Image (cartoon, rainbow, N blue to C red):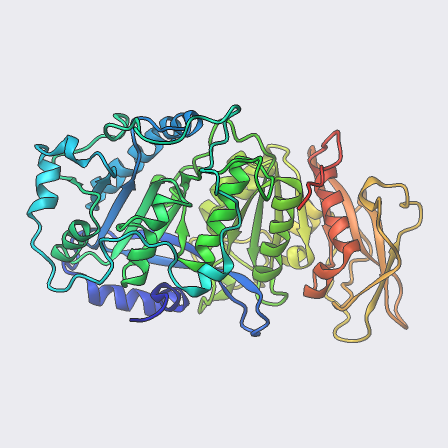
Amino acid sequence: MIDKPWRLWNRLSCPIASVLLSALHLHAGAADPLVLNGRSRIPASDNSGRVEAFAARWEWDPAQTALVICDMWDRHWCQGASRRVAELAPAINEVARLAHARGVLIIHAPSDVVDHYRDHPARQRALAAPKAASLPDGIDRWCRWINEEEKAAGYPIDDSDGGCDCDPPCPHGPPYPWRQQIDAIEIASVDAISASGAEIWNLLEQRGIRNVLLCGVHANMCVLGRPFGLRNLARFGKNAALIRDLTDTMYNSRRSPHVSHFTGTDLLIAHIERHVCPTVLSTDLTGRAPFVFGNDRRPRIVFISSENEYRAAETLPRFIGTLQLEHDLACELAQGQSGSARPNQAPVTGLESLARADLAVVFARRRALPADQMNCLRGYLARGRPLLGLRTASHAFDTRGNCPPGFAEWIEFDRDVLGGNYQGHHGAGPSVTVDIAPDARNHPILEGIESPFTSAGSLYRNTPLRAGSIPLLVGSIPGKHLEPVAWTHLRAGSRVFYTSLGHPSDFEKRSFQRLLINAIEWAMSRPEPLEVRPR
């Protein structure tokens, strides 16, 4: 058995993946493929032990795809969990409806209460599936860890108390109150009902289903560990993926790491992407912004990451982890496709999240985006929303004439949005000495910055800045004049901060991290400094 088959799947370039998928089709030409954007976290290519975000575009045959809805009960022993399930259920129902219309098999898996549906045609369908020629050993048992690596890593959240976030905590224990799946999720006669790993495996094998999407609750318990859960699906060779905005955790925010309930879910999703399987957004099926719980009031930041020069796919996830753990911010990483044969036109997944964002952060280099994705960014800025640009953001959407049909550039992004004047860089050479610009020492973005400090990245040439841009930091190398390396700019009501810093080693420096955190606070116009939470 191949360990983590999804890693091999994710590393395939889009053209190769398409060929393999075509070979797997049982009903060639029957229906348009499901276009899904998977995100996972894989070991960095330099064998450093660090992790980088990896994005891949899949085209799945609907006839070879199932959607499993896990444990969306009518009620839960935890009242908070019951309320979140009730809020989540209509969103899951809509995704199931759209997936069903595309030809996807919908499997309802409400553990413990399947007998409630014993006479339902969907239950009979699961029972009638012939036994698979080979049932994997362990497919009908709970799976606590996918392998020793995940076990050694452990969960990023402490759920040892059962995870009730209510105050006072709800009584926990039998008799359990669930009696059926919540009524807000419709069960069609052509669906299937089962919570048995063997029965669901039989259904998948009967129909030649290789691809499984899973949603429901709870990510740190049933979603991962049930016999039909993500661990078993992934380790036994299915292309499994969690719909990450259609799940929840059992996590008590009074427990380690002492973040909000919803940040706890985000940390668990990162664990799943690293150790178990990729995730996708419901956006891929609905075309709309991802689902967000109404009580999730955290400031929301969307990081747009798409470049191959400065390891943004590695440095941004680590920085996001700091923002989550120390500042309890909601961060969505919209990662550009990895390993694309045409890097200048690599789509970035998750830009629909900008509809609800409080801040956008751009770290991209010479990318043309599909027109609808570029419109998400243009629309965001048209609403007067703030933005941070890092390093190659000065030429983020300028492909130097290599924009293909159906894609869009934004050549004036540096001048019109960032207020810059990128003229290339001085090339490899001595470290850049970075210091505070004259008259800028009292700017709030520079609070706590220890200067001067050095950067290993080459010095960008940005002189002169656009009128109205205010330099905060300047950089120098021997024999060259000073260049602005960080500044602010106001654009049609949008607060914009840009820095040409962003070399991987910059992210290790306290002054650079403090600079970015201050800039986030300034851009979102927060009246109080970001709270630093104990770790």
